[in-house]
Amino acid sequence: MPNVMIRKNDAGDLLFYVAKKDMEETIASVELDTAETWGGGVELTDGSRWYIDPISPPPVFPTTLRFKRGDE
Amino acid sequence: MTAMTREETQALIQEVLEAYPDKAKKDRAKHLAVNDQSVEQSKKCITSNRKSLPGVMTVRGCAYAGSKGVVWGPIKDMIHISHGPVGCGQYSRAGRRNYYIGHTGVNTFGTMNFTSDFQEKDIVFGGDKKLAKLIDEIEGLFPLSKGITVQSECPIGLIGDDIEAVSKKKGKELEKPIVPVRCEGFRGVSQSLGHHIANDAIRDWVIGNRDGDESFPTTPYDVAVIGDYNIGGDAWASRILLEEMGLRVVAQWSGDGTLAEMELTPKVKLNLIHCYRSMNYISRHMEEKYGIPWMEYNFFGPTKIAESLRKIAAFFDETIQVNAEKVIAKYEAEYQAIIAKYRPRLEGKRVMLYVGGLRPRHVIGAYEDLGMEVVGTGYEFAHNDDYDRTIKDMGNATLLYDDVTGYEFEEFVKKIKPDLIGSGIKEKYIFQKMGVPFRQMHSWDYSGPYHGYDGFAIFARDMDMTINNPCWKSMQAPWLKSAEGEVEKLAASA
Image (cartoon, rainbow over all chains, first blue to last red; front, side, top):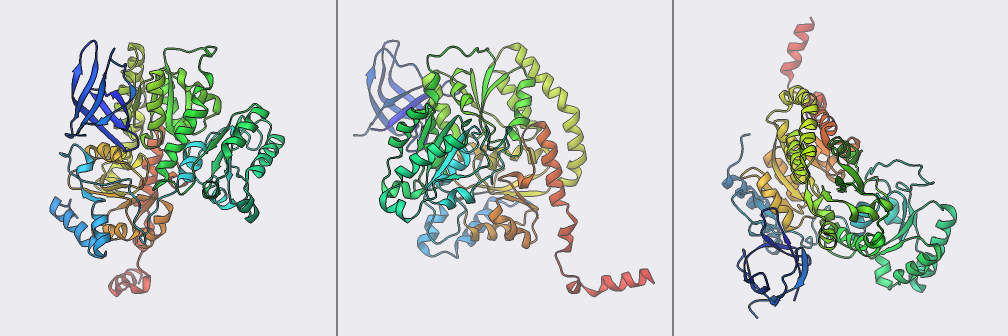
């Protein structure tokens, strides 16, 4: 369950940054991304899957959230 | 020698790796790569930020070096105690040439060495009492210091001293920030973790100090320069460009920086980050906590400067954007003259770099402005995000080497035969004795500044005087030269 910092890059994509793992990936898709909720399964551009319980109202980025590995 | 093809470069790497035993070969192979601009993510071609292989020559530093030497050390109005045995502080004292303004020993302390000088008894009985006494002595001798940091050396972590408790107690007593930094040298694989630890200490002990205090008058044009260590005056050469654009530089991190500047940084509108590797952590933190955007910029060479100035201006209104163009136009005649003077002397020369932080990618633009080509580059302590940024800046089929060993670097140089090497003091004399022109690119070979338009003039001059130095023609002893030349000379003089 790493702490992940989510921020927007210049192009407006969401970046998934894990400081301890030294990993910075772009988020390819988010399961729930509506005006009310944000979260669920998250897929990154490198193909890995992560999960977070849906948050409502959606968080303001940048922010740090705790994710679970999606394949568990 | 013409540019190498991808296969040739790959073959060179293989050839160099042959000297290693199997296990070491397997490990080192992951750190050497041929650059391919089509690769999006560096982790597919190069491994970085891993423990150095035992038995090879590495030039990496330690966490203490990253914290005391790089991030905290240049904060001029604080006293940085090298807590532990005397050597770490003494041998790193003032070596990085972080210039600053002030009266050393009165209100600034940059080039001084403060140490608790651990003896055997301190290791056996603990050094907390000594630290408390030392802080009292500092306060008595240097009352104008604005704060104190305790930079741990290895033994502090090993014997389990509680520097946090001492710092808190003394901080209350003296009413000054006393920051304990857990940057024991054994932490992590290189100085990179020291940067991170130092950033975290700033986050925990400094950044929030003025939260809720609105007494500082702000303007819409406030920026902070982050990750410029003012080596040879770099930060000053950068700062004037920003000020000419109409921006107000509130803080310099950390070259010529002060504690007050750091505390005020959360009030700025934009963080400008030069050395991404050592200070991205604090920029990310400020973005999250205070909503301050950050951007990376590059002030090496006119092409990159113009690019960066425009990028910075895009964050602000039209006045700043117009000013940015004015600044670029103002210096155009100056830098064109420099290019006209030096480019013919340097055109086509090939450079190999091996440094740390941001330089392996940032200086490429400056070399290209002078018509030179960077044929190999590598970082001492980069992470993959640094290589992500490097791949695009480097030419195809050029060499990338991470935490290169002494042996590999020498072999690469023998085969590639560059016209110039830019690396550190530990490499300097080896390569000069091999007859290759060399610049020490950690502290600009005691020259500088290299940032900004002013710095570019000095950069170009330095590269010229190194590469075109007549001494490189005298590498062979006169009595070993062929006799024919002598005969002609005699004939001419007769």
